Image (cartoon, rainbow, N blue to C red):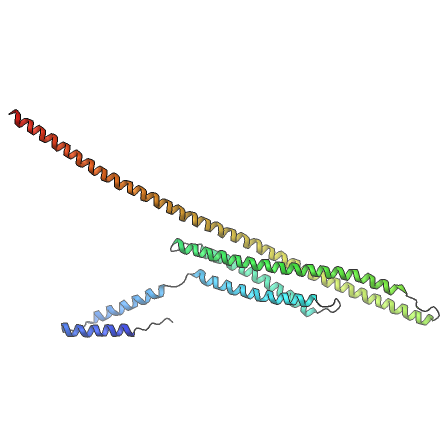
Length: 312
């Protein structure tokens, strides 16, 4: 609740009332006191009217959301680096789930920021008190949309790099696995003089091949799933990027229109000033012409009177 220190005002009013009693020898009426209180209330109302426009609160809220997105993007980048440095067979499902969840959160937050920027643009384009306020609001919207666009580009670049590294990792894995299989088939029978040992080696080789094939399929399925999820997030981010770019373009068009209107208004004011100057000059010339005409008429009348007097 807003409060003000009115001690100085109270002391001033009290001293003034004391001087009035000493000089005029009467006490102030209740009506005067009521009028004094009403004046104070009017001042308080005037003080409370000076509140910032609604779009400023929306702009602060969007800035807070953008800071949260930056923090989550930093954490996601760290998880990407940590996940990509792991060996191919040392998978961590909880880490993958955290990456997936964080990616979805960032995409949803970017969508929310885009919606908030659109609402901010609608609030800023409402009729303002003057052209300066409207231009200020349009500049704020354009700056906020540019910040959102920069974050969108950064997130899209982060996802693209992660996707490229996942694909490279998958290609390396596919290239290495056939070489391992060839090494296992190079000497499948071992010692020809020990059939039991050879049978054990053949059985072991078959089990290793099955296990290796199973791990290969599982790894490829995980990589394909991660790639599909990253591609989906990139598509969502591209859509947000297109919308934000269109919003920035619209705000630029609005600013151009405002500047054109300001320039056009200045030109019209200058033309109006010229017309007003011409009208004043024309009025002055008309007054002079009327005075000259009156003088001529007076001279003619006097001449006629003079001729009449002389003829008599």
